[in-house]
Image (cartoon, rainbow, N blue to C red; front, top):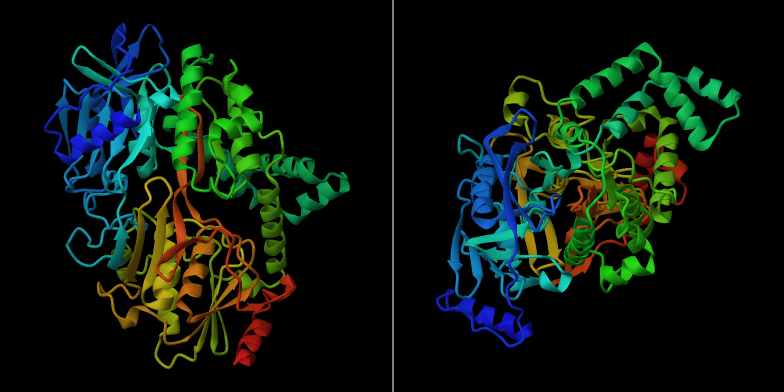
Length: 635
């Protein structure tokens, strides 16, 4: 196998001009019975049905394991990616070349990166994986994912001002080592739909789903029933009387929660919330996807799905070293999850995925999303959740309750004398809002729900004429993360330059990008967009997670922001969407690992960042008057 891979690399460097020599010991090609079936094809919503459908291929009578022909795949990608973000992906294009004698199909991007599929050795190699899967016009390993110019060609909310990159080396995976089938037969080059989806669609937070009736492309995070969102909104309608009534019943824990939820759902407002969510859900792809009759996985799909899961986790889980995972084959055996994953029941397999994400990986990002189309239940975490996740959730709840004792601390923006407090419990940015147009007519989104709106309005108040503000405190004490672009925008507002570093655990690529933000919305990046001339502080706790950990790390790296509170909660990897071959949706800590750059080296930030001044008692976090006085006495 190694000889074959080296031969393939040599052929690549010669522009694939010659066929690689066959190596001793390679298996003779196996002839398959191939059936092609054109199925309905949907993208994003049931209303967006692609007229000609999508051709899938099935081998040897197995009906639940679809293959895709590579010519059709690149045609789909050339249509899909530019339409998803026309400004960023305007130049995106893939061409395909076939070396029939060598059994190599090469997919080459417009940026000269390529993916070579070797059907003889059963391997796939990229010369620069990160370049091959990135947006055409974005910076290398871009986390902002915002077009630097708008549709009128004017500077947009944010742009990269400088970049330092070490590109990916040749990166390869041996599909044959994982038992992943590849078929080159009758002039067709077929790969499993799941494998292509994993390595080419996951980076766009998308996946391809097949329920034996139709195929669809959807955002992985949206392939679920809206239970969590609906529950969160229902809980905002809970009254003190309801809580008192449950207390009189002597209920606690999950029983108390379920009793309160039942009470609020039976109110007129609660019923209206449920009706609204369910009406929207009826129009979703997930509703269509899960509406087919329940069933079981074929033996072929079960084995393929297990092996494909191993391949994807080995390739993309970004915290393997920290979790002492050599291979996921061994890890799933050591945790006894392999038995359920290789069993006949799709529900039990989904329960194993849930346990893997929450109990064993337990990293705050890994989580179950929704079950397979083959069954309506499944995905239950019998363990009750991981120890780290439960500890984090308990602290988050405690701090939320403490903050309610100080109403001023719940305001997104609040001033005490010469000190301004800006509170962010998450980083949010709207992908559909034109912030420039909205600001011009005074209709920015709710600053309590939108980071860009909050910072634009806070900046106006802090920099107003005769402003008394000398100190600005960014309260991230219960910030659980969110959208990286909004977090980067926040760093740029504080510092002028937002320096963000990424190490890719799959490809080895390293990138440090410096971003500038247009906070006063004048289509310019200058000193009027930052408050770096003021005294800056950031309040953190172990509930400051993910991007709520990234921002304090950027402040620590810069050195101009004083960190107050307690050590942050970590969460160093960008979320990676995942699916199983039998249709389960979940997520993990992915291969893009946010890093702390020191002396030219990239260090992991998963263990959190230490504050400059420790505030021992959480009760002292939210008394704004006392905290402002404490800040004045620090210097």
